[in-house]
Length: 338
Ligand code: AHG
Ligand code: MN
Ligand code: MN
Ligand code: MN
Image (tube, protein in one colour):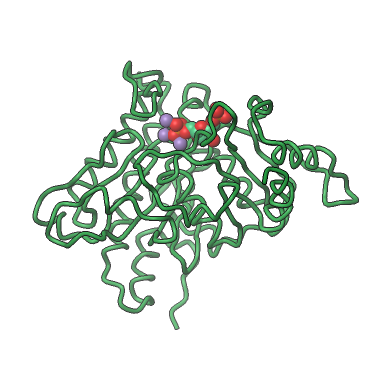
């Protein structure tokens, strides 16, 4: 039985998977190598942002109604240019594009995968040097091979995800990605310019002490959410606490910390925005998939996020995601809202 060698690069790991996973065709491995390359290109831009006039806004607004940051646009174009010329992706759904991007050529039309992505997550933090990230998920297309993809290939529930991951451009640059078989972490080694396996077989602790919410929205939260946050504030060492409130404002950074150390993150709906802010297809579903594979869980307050049947590319959903036992306690409080 082949075992992964320590300090395997991402490429070596995808080839290891190819050799050990029955029926693997190499397409997903190839797509992962393209994603890894795109993230390395974005990382080099992120690291020099202050020096090469790529900070600040582009001067346009995206379909979300947000001011597009230059780095949002650079990251988005980096992915689309690279994947358009790969042979493993038939099209992309991106936060930064109103509609799906169809790679309509004979080779791409025969690719069985499509990619959903948030090319640059945490854009509000770009200019102040705080961790930002990229989030992605891979779906198998449902329309016939040989034809251009349609929106139907993207509007699939998260329980149909084949692979998902994120990159955090932080104190180190890390790529977390995996399939239902398991999640693995790869740290970018700048001396060789490769992502190297550093966190094999990631698990999310069943309990944690971090809770993450934007208290600026507190007045709009439901009674159940307020009740849970009060309970978090009152934790002591006698009942699993004391807890620490940590909210960075980059979903990738908050989610990554809570995945590794245990914790709960929430972006609830409010009276004015009942669906909250986070997008189902390229923020909530990939993260929910990753947590579920690692032993955690994600809900919209009523059901498993991964079971939501999407109806629009950019639809939003309330999100609660975290360690299994913390999520169970939250759901007790959310019963107040029924
Ligand atoms: P993006 O930069 O891709 O638009 O995502 C920003 C999201 C997410 O990263 C973060 O958790 C959330 O916005 C923070 O929102 P608030 O500033 O409203 O708390
Ligand atoms: Mn945005
Ligand atoms: Mn985002
Ligand atoms: Mn974004």
